[in-house]
Image (cartoon, rainbow, N blue to C red):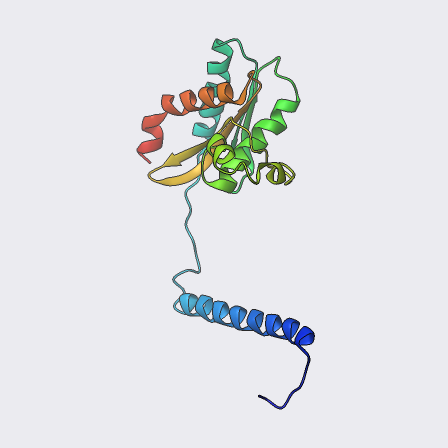
Length: 181
């Protein structure tokens, strides 16, 4: 067609490369068009405040303690970075990482970690090999006015379902503070 001859095997990489260039070019043009007027130059995002994060973590530990469980509660921000960690005196040290990784699974998936686990059993084993992610029950989404502002992960109770129940009860205790924002 263009006066270039090549066999079928060498044409495939060329076509793949051409398709990638076109996709990048179209995607880049679209991105530049969106930013041409500067409307997307500064982005505002909602994040959980330190006081509420601390209150949620403390309440999560308190709720589980009332049921006889020594746990760790971690609140992560929308980027998955730990903001607050509360650990019961006798909670094993490993619960810090497990609670954090459960909360990060929420940020990754956009749903509670137990829901993520149930709906994506097909990739759970692979996801557990992603650094900083554990697809186990016990992580819940923290929302305010429809936006995910963080996640609360709890670890240490005998079963992720119990961790998740403590986390949900902690969120319910501060429902009005979350909804009014």
